[in-house]
Image 1: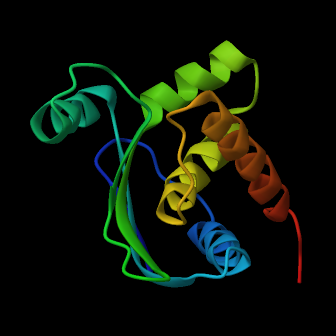
Image 2: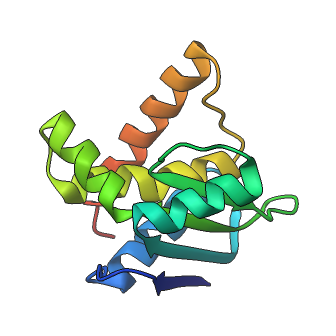
Length: 139
């Protein structure tokens, strides 16, 4: 089950379309969906979480807490809508495109992909691109 929670003015339209896509991504990685919660918030909300739980004093676009057990993907994904918008502006891409990248980034972490080293980051970006393309596929 995928839940969407809003701690800001932002609302994700077509939640069902996003849920279907995210579940397809999970299945494409040989995993199954457990309980996944997305929490959309602003910079200050996410900064507080970053400081309290990770001891980081920086702004970020996403923080994910992984509760995955075996091949059952579960977790809480906190997304700063402000950061996503700023990143989209910096990259000169539509907000929705960057949002898809961030939405699936957390799931890919739960599937075992890392992004700390340069080679891991390249693989993560490649997987993000691959999974974003799945968003448009109709079955």
